[in-house]
Image (cartoon, rainbow, N blue to C red; front, top):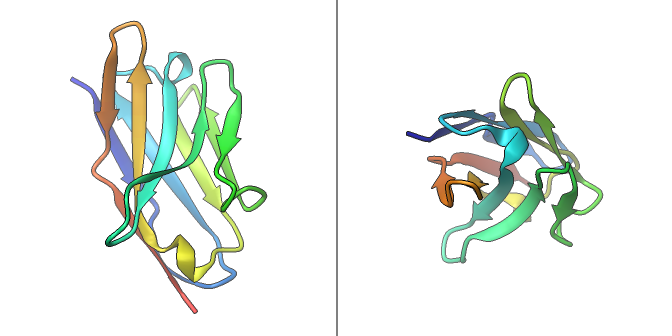
Length: 117
């Protein structure tokens, strides 16, 4: 059974930083696609950043240059370092992982990020 547990969310002032963590069990991140998504009230869930098996990263235009996704294979954890936060970054952030060998995708429960102006 795959379990993804996000942590690190909270309330921060605009311009501040947060680091989100996604810890996994039942799936090996270094051989999986992992992405951070977010969903604000009334909006669709959108991709923020992702990292592939070979370590390639991709960012949405809205966070490019401010957020950094990384993976710690030893801890089987993926991080999202968020700097220069803006009020429009306020959302629930979700971790998603896809194991192509088992064709298995899983979501975490989400962590709330709130950026005050």
